[in-house]
Image (cartoon, rainbow, N blue to C red; front, side, top):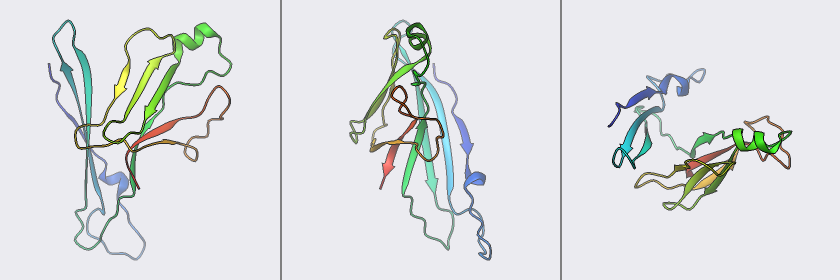
Length: 156
């Protein structure tokens, strides 16, 4: 069973219009595709979501250097003010390994029961960094909450 891909063009959000600069069209074009795939047989299979990005420079007059690219991973890891049954029901543990082509992000329910969400880079892509969203996330950090992070398939 394979679902149709969902395609989103993010170009209008990222178009740069500097005052006094005459530019035809967008500086960078970013498109995202998502599709869900079923891997394995009906009884033992798993659902997989594949996300692809296409970044192009349609401008004939400007050179663009892409410094990094990240995917926000806001998982519920805030144990503050919760009792154990509440943590087991609503929270998760996130383990990340920024190991290039061998990298992954693993999300497990705090109860330890149920399926595991495993995020891995596709062939030809690496997982280079696990960056805390310190400037973007106003959530208070504490001993029981280390904040939200983003996985970075490309970091310079």
